[in-house]
Length: 272
Image (cartoon, rainbow, N blue to C red):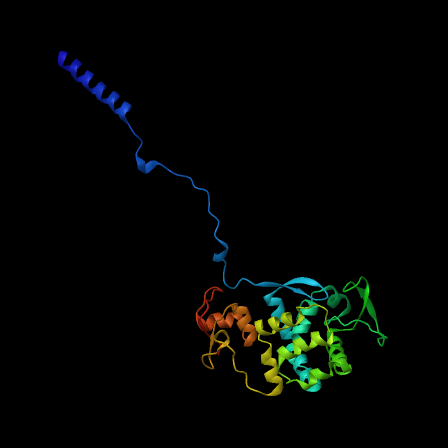
């Protein structure tokens, strides 16, 4: 009996000791952390860029929208260059800037893509639009093609623009500065805006095409390393490359074994 009592007393002491000295294993501790948002730089590289265009209207447009606009009017611009001598690059850049790539109010309401005001000789339809002054008279056209033709006639029939046609037909920088000098726009930054658009979207290539000259890339961002490869530059997306070389995004992915839309600067993309 004595032995049983002693053993029971020792066992109880050990259990009590275990309970008092028990610590929860560290492996069972869970720390709850708040989710951390990914930085903006982790966004896919094909995310459409945007820019603000401001001439007769102030609008924000995506790169894809601008590329669509270029694709829609590049042939018209090249034809006007051949017929009237105005650089294709200047025509398209003015259309992009003045019409917000076709999204500005004046373009939507009046098909006026170049911000041309009525002037005293205009007898056609018109709309009122706030520009340098409130409620100014702007020309209205049945469609955008009429606006493009009238833009060519506007420049070729006014003596103040005569000096422009003495410039080289593919000297877009001189043309941009000349338009401001002749009074086409009052914005002092008008030439810089046109030149920026032309160089960003490589519109000068259409001047070469219209003149039947070979296009030579100005820098490595535009360089095609061979007839089948394109070197990705800053701002390029699969969509912009597809538009440039008239190939679908799906076909680009297939040719290059690309699963998503991510591409990187310096990457060589098969285009043929």
